Amino acid sequence: MTGREGRAGKLALVTGASRGIGAATARELGGRGYHVIADYRRDEAAALAVVADVEAAGGTARAVRADVCDPGQVAALVAACERVDVLVCNANIQPPFATLADLSWEDFAGKVTRELAAVFHVTKAVLEVMRGQGGGRIVYVSSISADAVGPGTIAHSTAKAALEMFAQHVTAEAGPHGIGVAVVAPGAVRTDATAGLMSPEFEARWGRRSVLGRMLEPEDVATVIASVADGGFHAVSGARITVDGGQRFIPAPR
Figure 1 (cartoon, rainbow, N blue to C red):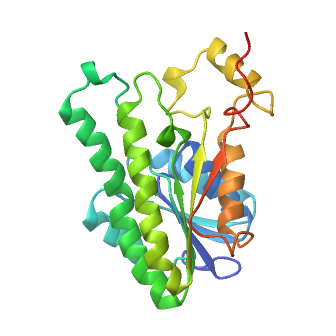
Figure 2 (tube, rainbow, N blue to C red):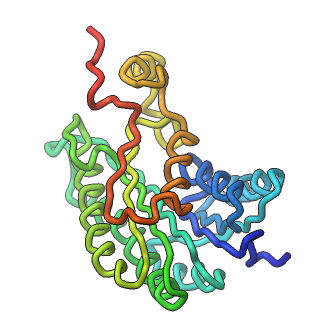
């Protein structure tokens, strides 16, 4: 079997796949028979560990280094795929957590610009492939912050809201070519990227506001992403699926 062939001839490209939700999604899709292209920007060892996990479970995967904010690197990344059945846009652009009063324009614009660049270039390149093959599925990983106001999250919320509007336009353009689009919006998830914001008190508080009785783990979100991507939602496009354990509705404990 070559590095370009999955067990069922299906290929999934996951951006930001070396850790957190992206890594969990790569493992989940690998377990569902996709050959996984695990994109990473810096941490080669972590990406190779994800590939090893997929292969240990009987799947196939390959790590490819590419900064998805760079159109040249994206072109090389997509060229490594003979086809793309599923694209998961997950690459995380670490936001500056600050109020407007303390936020510089450079930091704000950098977050918004890179967040959109991380989906713009890879979507454009993959859509060309998917149109040629007659279909595919794109899943964008957003956040419940896209329609919520929280202390210090102005840059993050604005960037994710823009990403979700971008996804709606892609839905309209891609649909006539048999390409489905969805947005998965997680709540607070325990990942490497959020480790600095977590505390035992924080985790306990959000656990009490979840039907799971605990913080979300990357695997909780990955299962939803893979289910959306893997055909079970074939008649759904343009939808936003919230994965937060019900925290928007379960009242905060007094």
